[in-house]
Image (cartoon, rainbow, N blue to C red; front, side, top):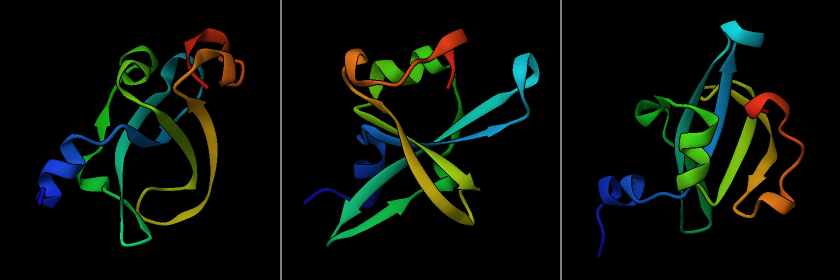
Length: 93
């Protein structure tokens, strides 16, 4: 049985929280795990990353409304196949 730390490290699903707009924006990506029918976001494991780097690893990326610590809603912005992803003008959603 895998430990929680191992599940988090191997996660291929992330939630994106973006601060700022345009060139001054910074995006953080927190891994997601699913256990016993519950979806967990792990904000303590969030890392700043580029869109290109995260899409090489991710199967799914969700944009959070609110914050990692106080999410209001989620919107799917990336599904592992580029043809299924929404337009990503400028490299970031």
